[in-house]
Each structure stands twice: as structure tokens, then as C-alpha cells.
Amino acid sequence: MTPCLCASPFQRYVTTDNPYDYVTMSIRMSEDDPQHGMKMKMLAQLGLDANDTYLLRNDQSETQMVPEALLRSLRVQLLSWGDAGKWRAVGEGKVVSLENELSVLRTVVGAVDKMLGLYPTTGADDGKLMAAHQQATQAAASAGDLEAQRAALQAAHDRGELLTARRIKAILLRYPEKAILLAVKLWCHQRWNQVLTDGFPSEAFPAAGTDKW
Image 1 (cartoon, helix red, strand yellow):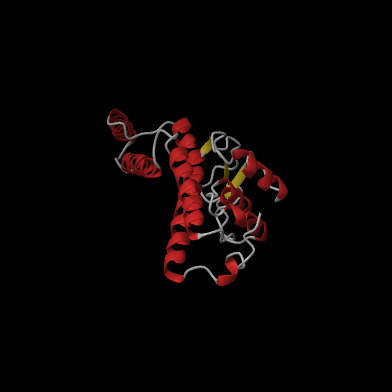
Image 2 (cartoon, rainbow, N blue to C red; image 1 turned 90 degrees about the horizontal axis):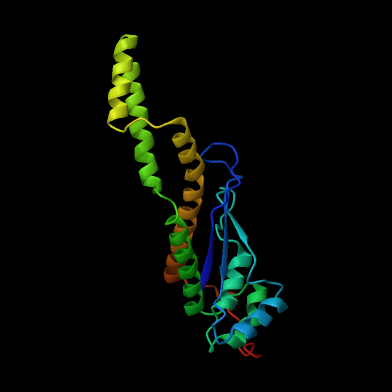
């Protein structure tokens, strides 16, 4: 699988909890897959396209961080030869098999990790930088007269604790994207843990005798 790693450049308001924040994800199977042609036909018959790009949003009203269409596409793209006869069930929103579902979730997590790796800093790094900046500016504000404040700010600058306005803006713009990706990763882990503890309902799997080509 080849993830197309696209962190959305279309920034919105500079907030950390904007429901309109999003990143884009597109995951395409390798053309070297021996079943590539067959799977592309399956996707087409299900109204799916392996080249589609999906929006991942941090909308708290949504309980599913990964779009259902992306999950369905990956279920087909990651079909094993033994599960290939169950592809029509994907169009009904059913799970092909536990092995297939694990491959789907692992693929999404792998794509998220690669996307996060494109950023020069982590969300934790950004938090530390912002905290140090805030502490430095607050300490300078309470340092006394104007001259003392200037001296405190200069000392903080020399220690690398002060951030430029451009740096702060960049952090605030990147943070929501990182938060979305981390939320997607957490959702995948929670979904698999739920499968391990509760299993899938019987209706989630194709009915017996429906695994025909």
C-alpha cells in the first residue's frame, strides 16, 4: 500500500478546536499487487475509487474518525486471495474477516505515522515550546519596571524561550492537524480493542454461502 501523504494547506481560523479543521488522506494499493486489476474492477462495481482522497475531521459530533468509504475501499484493496469471494459484502458495510479488518486498521495507522513524520516537531514538542514562551513572557511582565522587563525578555530570548509571532502562528496552524491525526490513530486502536473484547456482531460478516464471485 502506498499512502499519499497530504496534510491540508487550507488553513482556517487560528484555533485548536475548530470543527472545520481537516487533513486529507489517500491510500492506494500498489500496482504490483497480483490482484490489482481484479480489485480495481471490484472497487468500480462498488462505486469506489482507489484514487479518492478523504477528509479526516476533528468533529466531536462524529463517532467515527475514519470515513466509512475509506474503510470500504481498503477492505477491497487489502483482500487476500482467500477472502476475495466476499468482496460484494463490502458494499453492504460488512466486515470481510478479522484478518482483513486488522490489515485495514494497520494501514490507516501506518499512513498516520508517516504523515506525522512529515512535521518537524511533534504535538508534545509544540506544547513545550508554547509553555516555555508563555512562562517567559509572564515572568518578564512581572519583573518590575520597563527596563527590568526588557532585560528579562532579552534573557528569555537568549535562552531560546521566546517565539516569534510567525513561529507561534505556524504552531497554532499545525497543531489541529496533528491532533486530528492522533485522534484517528487512537480511534483505530480503540476500534480494534473493541473487536478483541466484544467481537463483531454476526450481521457484520457476510452470510454463509455469499462468498461467491
